[in-house]
Image: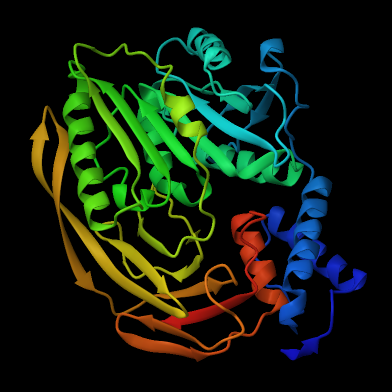
Amino acid sequence: MEDVYEGVISDAMKSEVRNYFSGILSGEDIVFGHDVRLELEYVADNAGAVWSAWREANDRYSEEKLIDIAPLSEASSGKWTLPVELEPSADMPYYLGVKGNRPDGGWPLYLYLHGSGDKESEWATGLSLCGNFNDAPSMYFIPQIPNTGQWYRWWQRSKQYAWEKLLRLAFVSGEVDPDKVFFFGISEGGYGSQRLASFYADYLAGAGPMAGGEPLKNAPAENCANIAFSLRTGAEDSGFGRNRLTGYTKDEFDRLEQLHAGYYEHWVELIPGDGHGIDYSPTTPWLASHERTPWPKYFCWENFEMDGRYRDGFCNIHVIERSNQDASSRTVYEMNIEGNNVNMTVRNVSYETVETVSGIEMKFEKSYEDVSRGRFVIYLNDNLVNLSEPVVVTVNGKTVFEGIPEPSLGMMVSSCALFGDPMRIYPCGVEVNL
C-alpha cells in the first residue's frame, strides 16, 4: 500500500473507484487495484467521495430502474424482469408510491409481500391495504409474485435478487432513509418476510410478518438483534402449524431478550379467537416508530443458506471463506464491542429436529462446535471504536489484532461494494484467518 494520501481523493482516483464499481455491478470478478492509506481526519469526506462514485456507477449501469415517485393513491406501477437463470419467464410488476410528506432524512421504505391466492387479486388487495395503513410518511414497494406453483415463494434466489436491487436503488436515489426500511407481509408474505427479516436483518429497522409462522431453522431469531420484530397470528390459525410456530417464535424471542436485554425488541402475539384472518392494521404503525442501528456493538449472525444461497456479509463483517463445509451446519458469528475491545466468537451450529407435525419440522435442538477454518474481515469505523486509540480484536479467545487501525481507500471501496449502504462505508478492517 502506498504512503498516506493527504486530504480527499482526487477526481482521477474517484474515477478509478467508479470504474471498479461499474465492473462489480456488471458481475465482473475483480479486485480494486489502487489502495491507499487515508488520513483519519478526512475519513468522512472520503466516504462521501466513495458513495458519490457508487451512485454515479449505478446511474450509468444499464438496467430497469425504479419508476418515478408518485402518491400511492395514483397506483403507479413498474415492472422488473428477473434473471432467467434464477427463474424462467419472471416478470415482477410492482406498485411504488408514497403517503404523507417527505421527511428531511428521506422516506421510510416498506416492502409488502402478499399472500398466495390469485396473484392479481392479492396484488390489488395489497395496494388497498397499504394505502389505508396509518404509517405516513411512508414509501411503499408492493410487488406481485411473478409466477405461481413452485415459484410462489418470496425468499427464493430470484426474489433475493429483487430485494437487493430494491435496497441498492432506493439508497442511491437519495429519496429513502437508509435507517427506516421495513419488510412485512401476510400469509405466504408472512412466511417470506419472516425469513427475509433474519436474512437481511442488518438492513432493517423492523419486520412484521402476519398470519404466518416459520420453523426457526428457516428464520433464526438470533439474527434479529437490533431490529423491531413483530409477528401476529390468530390463536386458532392451525393451518401448517402457524399458531404453534408463532408460539415457538415468541418463546425464542423472549429467551433472547432475557439473555441480551434491549437487543431483541419484539411483539409476537397469538390473537385470541382469530383464525387465519386478523386485523392487519396495527403492524406498520408499531414498526414506524423504530429505526435501524447501523453500527451495532452486539450482534449474532447465523449465516444460513436461503434457497441454496448464503450472504457474504452482515453488519460489519465480510465473509471470505465460511467455516462450515456444507449445509449440514452453519457458521455463527457473535460480536460484542466494549470500548476498544472487539470480541468475536465463531462457531458452527447443527440442528436436530425434535418435533414434526404432518411432515413439517416444528422444533429443533441446536448443538455448537468449534471451528478450524474460515476467513473474514471485521470492518471498523469511529462509531464502533475510537480509531485514534489502540484497538484489540479477539476471536475465539485469541488476540488477532492489537494496534491503531489504518484507514484505507480499499476498505471503504470493498465495504461499499459489499453492502451498497451509505451508512456502512468502513474505513478500517481486520482480516481474520482461523
